[in-house]
Amino acid sequence: MQPIVALVGLILAITSFNPALAQTADLIVENATIYTVNGARPKARALAVKDGRILAVGGGLSEYAGPATRRMDLRGAAVIPGLIDSHGHMRGLGALLESRDLRRAATIAEIAGYVRQQAASRPAGEWITARNWDQANWGDRFPSAADLDAATTAHPVYLTRVDGHAGWVNTRALELTGIGDGTPDPPGGRILRDPAGHATGILIDRAQSLVGSKIPPPSDAQIKRQLELAARECARLGLTGVHDAGVSARELRAYRELIAEGRLPVRVWAMIGGDGPLWREYLAKGPETGGYLTVRAIKLMADGALGSRGAAMWQPYSDDKTNSGLLITSRETIERVAREAAARGFQVCTHAIGDRANRTVLDAYAAALGGKNDKRFRVEHAQVLSLPDFKMFAANSVIAAIQPAHATSDMRWAERRLGPDRIAGAYAWRRFLALGVPVANGSDFPVEEPNPMLGLYAASRARTPQASPPAAGRRTSA
Ligand SMILES: [Zn+2]
Image 1 (tube, rainbow, N blue to C red):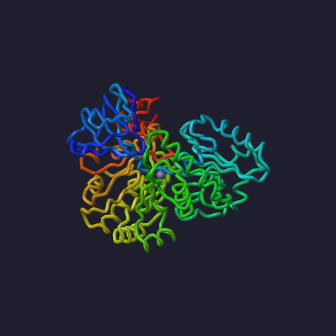
Image 2 (image 1 turned 135 degrees about the vertical axis):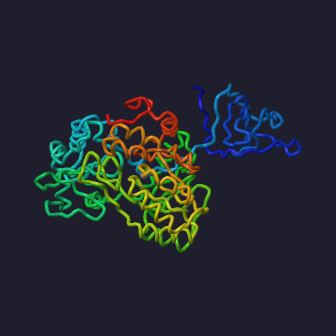
Image 3 (image 1 turned 30 degrees about the vertical axis):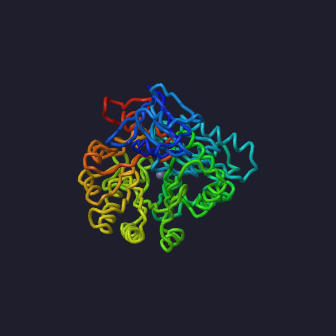
């Protein structure tokens, strides 16, 4: 495979050469395989750059060379436009980069060992947090509070599942939060309980906030440090832009400070997180479009995720007949926000994983949009759909913001959750393409890794670099 050279920070624009206008380039990249993403001229061999912008793309561009021009012979290597991740969580990535990634922990004991080690170096009572545990790594059994109690009873522990849709806590955290046998499930959330009715230590979706609200909030300096860390990591991986899927007012402030200090190396297109005060503020003042920060969208959550069985399904999970997931925002709310957004020039981006959640969002969008339009509303994930619902994307000009790496991560257990019929409408990106529905490719980092090459690989090969699907081309339960 040829090396790929990503031109960070450059926007690839095709200009036809006109000698009368020739300028002297700072840099000429020659003998390259340049993928222009221009259907009329998909490939080129040379690229001229001046003042950080592309002057020309073509065959040979030596007419742009002056005595001070740097010339780079790429010997056939590939050059692609800067990549944009259409769905990531910047602060989540930053927090992960400065803590421990539990993604590859293969046993509960390994995680308990990490917690024990953290407890030994911290004063009693201090919260221990980390993220990305995944029960699929040890046979799909949810862990319990007791597993963590073995590591510490003096520190409250809160560990977030890889999808961000479940929390695993110890007994100390349950006590501090006041979660007991009589605590009802909060709206949009579930406290998992054992047959005797005791909380097991797993909190699904909005039940997580019972604990999350007790953890001291991050300082402004911590938020800014995490955003900068994440942005540098994204730039290092060849991303030039990120769509941050749900930001707070404090995060926007931190972004503005980083931009003013010249410390934000990627462009951020931020979705306002939820329809709270920040959304009302932006509705009043209208969209904000800038070089490094654009705020022109709102993020809503229709349901949870498949791995933690919080995704809202029409029928119960095939591996849990008592559970069909949770709708966490009503159709009425989504429709109201959709109308507000459409009237003020904002996009709506709604997380929907289950078939019931996707249909609920599509119905709400259709009511607000009334057919083809130029509003570019999105469904984030669009992961499990009833087959007749695919065409609703096309009918209402809705973008499917997909994450191919979810398919290759979830293939270990997705059919077990969904059964053989529903799996046909799951991760079915080709059905969108066949209908002419625009798909936006993203990673959902830190749920998946931020390296965009892994998403492109998953999209084109339907496998991870490490593992093939269980049976040739077909996802089965592992
Ligand atoms: Zn996400």
